[in-house]
Image (cartoon, rainbow, N blue to C red):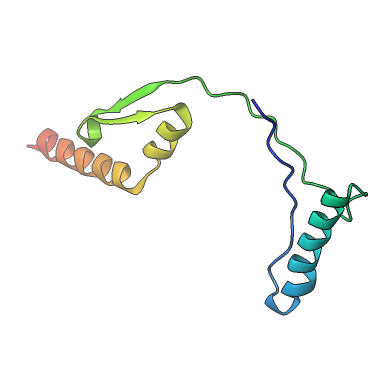
Length: 99
């Protein structure tokens, strides 16, 4: 596959400096790239991610919801809906145990 393009970090946190700190720098990077000269700022460091192995997860707690991929599964487990269902089930189990 083709390598991902470089990513440049630009600070857009101060709107009054947007033209200089974001727009101006972005135009400078593009102009330098197109003309083949040294870039005015360097790209951000690349993160080397290992490719995720494909996996299928089924959440019995969420009525058999199917989630593909380990990262997505972790996100699902931390989701508000999943947590709410988990609390309801625990509350229901506690009532049945107390009865």
